[in-house]
Length: 454
Ligand SMILES: [Zn+2]
Image 1 (cartoon, rainbow, N blue to C red):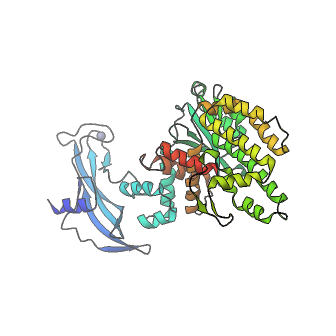
Image 2 (image 1 turned 180 degrees about the vertical axis):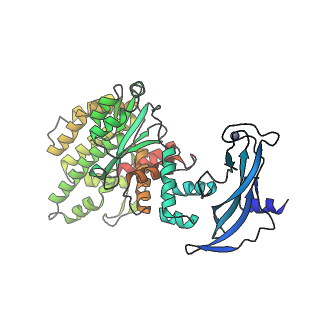
Image 3 (image 1 turned 90 degrees about the horizontal axis):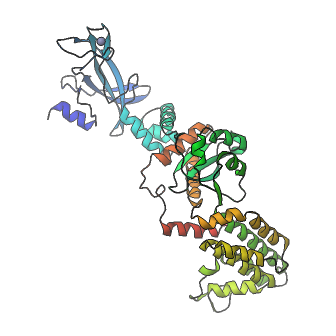
């Protein structure tokens, strides 16, 4: 192994045409713009196979050496110190066409002084949650270089206009201030959970124009679109995806019912506030167990609870809370039946239960809740048939939030978009955040989400 070989290996340079001459090799330090650099000296030379301009094959000295040119290349950090390579590049002269050209290397692109390994590191670092300033500091390049690399890497991740999955999920997320209403649109493949694209403006007109960039034949093949209950995208789907069926995310249907249940609890709570203060605090504190699905309420384990006398189970507490008001139990049962039929995908029974809600007179807002469900029955039927949901989008939106926070907010939507695409498309598929969830994880998320009231 030669010295040159050892230096090349230690600098992780793959190009064997770069030679480190031991006589030049002094490794001095140099200060450029207040930064200390370790400086390596190297030479790039080889016998070219053909002319870069006319393509004439190099034989019988048709291409000869024609001087050299020194260029300075950033190598990244070596033991926490930034390093430079002064590379003496060979210039060649072609006698066929009479023009000259420079030796090429995989270390650096033409007209670039930042080596390709640095670029790869920056792209990789961009996929992690950290600010661009931190990356710039870590790799010893300027912030504007990081931003430039962000832009160019983002461009390579542009989604293809010639493929579209059959099952889509729509959602929105809080974006940069400049976006209309500061909300942007995101859509994913609802089977693989991959992000397809994000669109700055989520307004109907813009989205229709956006989707019309996909060929009609492709849009015709979209089978389902999964979305929230109060989605503003109905017209977009109607106009752009003529054959798509709507699926309302099951979680949102459950959430819709939970909201009614929660409001009922609060109203009952208020009526007993001054007459039965102990019941009041029970209703106030134990909102969670009321929203829990009745089939997952624990009836086996006894424990002591400071709001109750003696040993109780979760089930006993729920029963007590429901006994405080006579309408409470009935509506609780009805909503849980609906939740159960929804979770088992039994659409017919769901409709039957919804009919049953008309048997008694109930509070107005509870009635409205059921009427809204009736309005969406077609989509709910699809929710029962397909197992697709928008659960994965919640995880994606959370990651976007942390990305935004790490960058101290983004002013430029293009930068935010590139950052999001990089962090979701460049990271390994095996990572937990990106691979499709297992059945157990999906169930766990569903459980967590069902307890949320917004
Ligand atoms: Zn030539």
